[in-house]
Length: 378
Image (cartoon, rainbow, N blue to C red; front, top):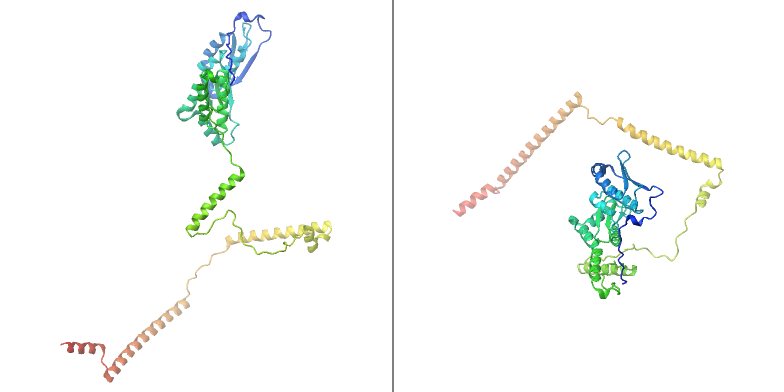
């Protein structure tokens, strides 16, 4: 790997501005959210003092919700207005004034990474944004220690402050995280790079053999099919051992084999020829369609009327019996009771007749049999 040259940035001195005062005034403005208004009002004096040292004027407009910076006749550094623009941008994004004031240093740069449009699903976006922060902010702290940057995750943006080289590394980590690559992989890579940079022997060599490869290997279609078939075969063997029916991916239904192809379906013109519609004139077709439409409307109307009429149909009621019906029921009840009494008498008479016949024939009744058996036992 080629050795990178570390450029030394000299501070801008008044003697470097040989042209004198600027011919034109440069200005930048940015809006800020409503919830930042109270904080900005409290710290605006500190912002003014920080910019006055560089002869840059600033304005806080609470009516329109905006901040603006502009050059003055005393401004000597032509690049300081861009630093002042970054300062108000960071203040609008939620960075504290003590941290945002460091952007006025020439060795510090900033980058605001927009992550709101990288993921469509809201739940997935929140989960991946939280992945940048990590449990109790551990992942964010690791990124800050390795890159020597200040990172703030706020809403749909990530604000980063630090050296120019480190800004590229943080941007890569954040964008890869939103593309479902965990930040821990990039953090491990950064740690290995930092250790390799300490060895002067590896300054002119490639570091690829030392860096871990976290690229996901995608299977080919044939490999996916082979894995699926193996899984299906193992499942079938297990089911066969258990005495169950075998499984198949697509179990086709059994069809009778016929050597002839299926009959061709009739075209729309053929159907019109069969029904005679093909030979009708345009006005006759319109009249026929109107008649069919009217018939359909009548059917729907009749159906709806029948549904409405169901609500007005009286339910079936049990009418109270009349006097004649009550008399008839009473007579029938008496006749039934009389018939039952007659049957009982007849049964009793039959039993007594049977007993008398048995006595006449000299047969032993069950009671006599028991008495005789008892006498024998004695």
